[in-house]
Length: 136
Image (cartoon, rainbow, N blue to C red; front, side, top):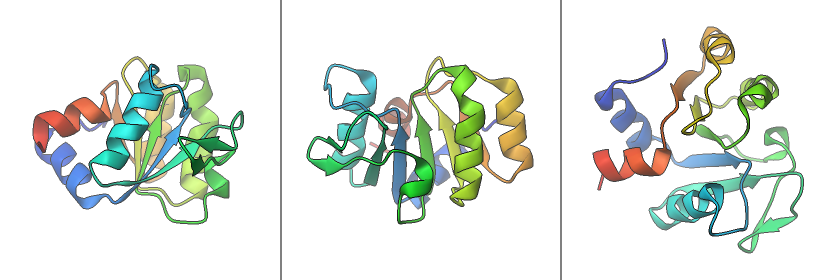
């Protein structure tokens, strides 16, 4: 079951320390760029993931989740719903704990598969909005 409980989302946001932003952009006008910067600003260790960049806002950018050398708590996804299957595979292989599908990223089949593989799933919610609403 996709997480939609405020108490559980609050717990995820306060217990997590590392976030991989899949589909991160160095364009501060794009949601993935703004939210990447927001997550860093509020204290998370954030890893940008995008094979089209080598750096984002001066940070090393990883081509895939599997190439990040640290454990990831949350995989925050800014990709099309049809791209989620491969991201689920990478998240599981990387021992991530949470798959967070941003606003508009809705893939019920892959959300259910991710849960069956041990990930907590939050879908169609903005991590920055939830942080602001529940933490700040």
